[in-house]
Amino acid sequence: MSSIAFIGLGNMGAPMALNLVKAGHSLTVFDLVPAAVKLLTDAGAQAAASASEAVKGADVVVSMLPASKHVEGLYLGEDLLGKISSSALVIECSTIAPDSARKVAQAAEARGITMIDAPVSGGTGGAAAGTLTFIVGGQAEALERARPVLEKMGKNIFHAGPAGAGQVAKICNNMLLGILMAGTSEALALGVANGLDPKVLSDIIAKSSGRNWATELYNPWPGVMDHAPASKGYAGGFGVDLMLKDLGLAAEAALSARASIPLGELARNLYSLHSSGGSGKLDFSSIVNLVKREQD
Ligand code: NAD
Image (tube, rainbow, N blue to C red):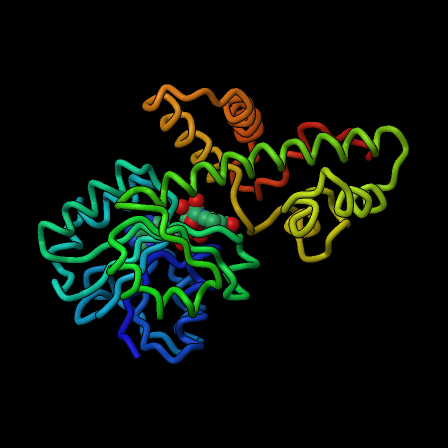
């Protein structure tokens, strides 16, 4: 069993790290938030006082941080790469700009360290169940080295291409997710405003041609799915500001390739409006509140 350093124990990182502990790996963890660390030490992981301390002697380093600035800040700014053994494998799971992923991977390579970008899909439910989809960018041999660890956290593992390609694929997926969640919200609000029960309408759409991940697993209407963030005051889950970040990454990718993403840009504006109204920390399915009437 590998000795693993896990950095970033938020909504996704914590359940992913818990699955590695359950699988019998020896885990040393670090997060800026002490309560997040305690959840893991209660489950049997070792706490480190810093990221540098966590990576000492680790065979594998996994990180799950919010955005590009955190990943670059950690590996390059704090020079974490300088503390990682050259025989170690780094699995960077955050959703970040493809250019950032390439920059950090090149810096790792210059030190002889193998690194892959391995952003995930499947939400906090998939992280807890160990059924995430990993979308990997980097060398095929590096993915094979990572596979035994990834398999303890996910059930689908794809090789998207060279360094940064995992991020490109993930950004395309999340742009579509943002559009689908906004569209699902609009359809439910329209039905409810015209007298339909949101649960009945959701059941109909889930078995009809408008079905999607939101209608199957992550319904944005409160009370339709007990386990969904919508039924828990939109707490936890995937933050509006994180979705806004991903739609911003899609906009940058579109600009650099001269691609057209009219619906992606519209979605980015909707989430931006929602965030600026004070909802940035809520789960992204709260986008339904932009179109839902108060009495519904
Ligand atoms: P989060 O904000 O809940 O967690 C991020 C964690 O990183 C926090 O606990 C924070 O304290 C920690 N952190 C930040 N900087 C740090 C540093 N320098 N050292 C140590 N810890 C640090 O975010 P999340 O929802 O877990 O998402 C993490 C990443 O996964 C993001 O890139 C997000 O886009 C992506 N993602 C999220 C979901 C989801 O459903 N939440 C799904 C797929 C992908």
